[in-house]
Structure formats: C-alpha cells, structure tokens
Amino acid sequence: MKVIKVKNYEEMSNVAAEIFKDVVKNKPNAILGLATGTTPLGLYAELIKDHKENGTSYKNIKTVNLDEYAGLDIGSDQSYVYFMRHNLFEGLDIDLKNTNIENGKAEDKEKECERYNNLLGEMQQDIQLLGLGSNGHIAFNEPNTPFGSGVHVVKLTENTIKDNSRLFADINDVPRYAFTMGIKNIMNAKKIVVLASGKNKANAVKASVEGDVTEIVPASVLQLHPDCTFIVDEDAASLLK
Image (cartoon, rainbow, N blue to C red; front, side, top):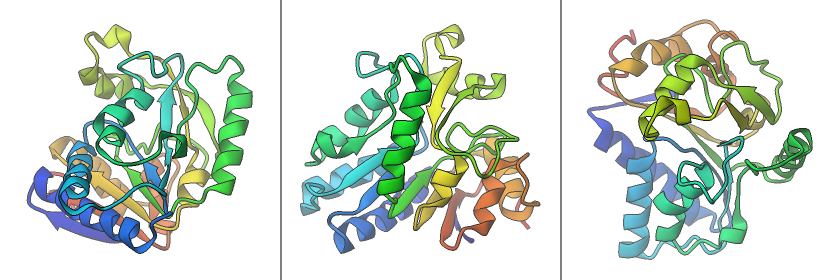
C-alpha cells in the first residue's frame, strides 16, 4: 500500500487526475471503476478540463460504477447515474453505452445483482476509484461486510445516511437501501486509488492504513491489494504515524 500525503483537497484531486490520465493515455480502451459523492468532484473536473484543453479521448473507454441507490434511476437528480452524467460523462467524449451502473429501479433485486456481478466478471477494472466512509466503509460495504462479498443490496447504516444527507434536501429523502459492488469485486481491480479529505476521515484513514485487517473496517482489506494508493490531505492524514 502506498500513501501520498498532500496539502489540501485541490492537490489531492490533481494528483489523482494525473494517475487516471496516465491510465487513459496508456490504454485508450481501459476500464475505469468510478465512484460518486463529493470527494471525486475535483478529480472529475480535472479530467474534463484535460479533455477540453488537451484532447485526451474517452471514445473507447468503458466504465463501471460502484453503486446506486435502490429505487432511483436517471429520472432522479439524486441518483448516481444522473450524478455521473452531470459531473463527468457530459464533459467527455465517452459513449454512454460504454458506461455501466446498477439499475436502481430493478424490480428483481437479486437478478440485478447477478447481472452486474457477471458484468464485472467480464470487465476487470484497470483502475478503481474509491472514497472512504467515516466508519471505514468502501462503496456501500458497511462494517462487518464479508471480504468475499460480490454485488449485493445493503441496508444503509444511520451513519452513512447522515454522511450522504448533505446531498439531499432532507435526511428523510435519503434512500435506505442501495446496490453495491462487493469487496471481492473491488479487490479484483488491477489498481486502486482511495481519496480521503478532511478531519472527519482521519480515524478511518488511520484504521484502514495502519490498523488490523478486519471486516470491522472494510477498507483495511486494501492493505492486501498489490497496487493500492491512498491520496490523503493533511487533515485526513493527521493521525497517521
């Protein structure tokens, strides 16, 4: 595991963007594993800027997203498929047919998990982006999620609902269930990049990077990955030895 300490959110985003641009330029048909939330917004803005200024092309790039709220789809501006289109895809030359995410409106949730699990089995991520929850969760894999888990539906914890409520008008609007890649799907990526910014992530960063590998802290499993990089700002890194 590699840890890159940076000064602030802007530098974190720039460093991550350089890593992603290298992947895209060296492999024009790469498969990018993407994430949502506020953490990657700076990174996505840098990728769009680079595309417009330098012409880096995403025409043959394919993407797979970590998760999606159960019950939401492109018709909701709080869905993750909407988020990705609005905050990244519409600023690139990517073919939307090459972008993949769980179907939040799927009536048969078990069948949808099986579909997406099979898709990921055929589309190994060249690089997977992760944010880090304040309780150490990655994607929607909450504490005590088995390390061998595949795509599944999870009931969100009150902690995660609170974390995500900043993106909704009211905390009661936050969905209580979500589809998510499992930890096994994440660990299958060739390269993993984790972004963490702010004092509220300091405990999670310390437990993930320096603590025991335990399902109590899902991100701690990343210590076992052969090519995982944490990019953390000063606040998020403040408890590291």
